[in-house]
Length: 342
Image (cartoon, rainbow, N blue to C red; front, side, top):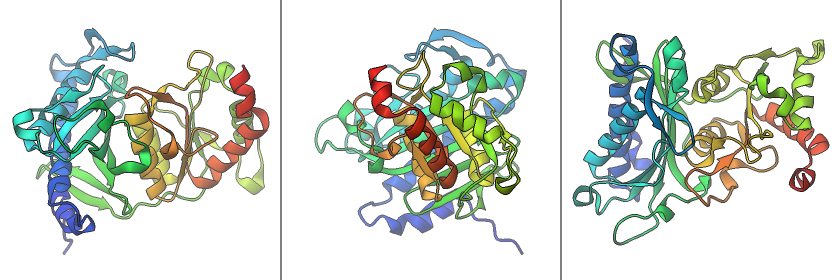
């Protein structure tokens, strides 16, 4: 008989990995799981209700907010407010950090950074989307939490994860003790352990990048793409190009099958486009814990200093050998010193 282990059971079993915690982190992760189920329900029936399309607002990134962006943001913040374990949330959808219910969260030990709905423009055409989240221990000991509590390097994360809403809904997370994946069983309404101890292949044959922006890429990236496209039997090239347009979905596929995801700097985004705090850092933490590598082409993502909640960064993430080779191309054809001068 197959024994089904739910997310809640798994979290409780692993609680002893954190001797300094008294169950707060476990409850916080369960709160995120509950919000994910609610968001999943709305995504699955999005075509049947008035929740598709634009909400009529522009978020802090200058991007048009979709109705589901707003809904997902509200659900995750609401779930994190109720438990009392989270003092503050930094979200892609809010210009400033959100202080949670002081009466409930005044003694909370954790802060959360989140992108509530990554790739939301894909929902209108029934393509996978996702959520990314990152959890830190707050630095301030007394009084209300402040923005400084979230401005921590990625190395300080105590947990990180993503939810991918696709043909099935999966929650993948790490607490620095490996990576585990849970698939939502709609018949019982529970996330069940389906992918224990995930490890990413050392190399792969998939590269994921928006080649429509090719003309604007650094020379190092252009040269690496051409390398991927050249026929070479010894290295099983040409590689396969796969780009969904939802970072979570692209990264999840590469995590399972092996591959590299690149979102480099461009002429219009000289610092990169993805957000370091709630996109790059949590996914870098997961990939490293799975045995992969994540850099900005020159330095480790998790070591980058964080100075603002919506800080942007470029990213090269995935199978270790593929990322290292892409870095070699960057070092040879797009040295960091030259980019700074330009």
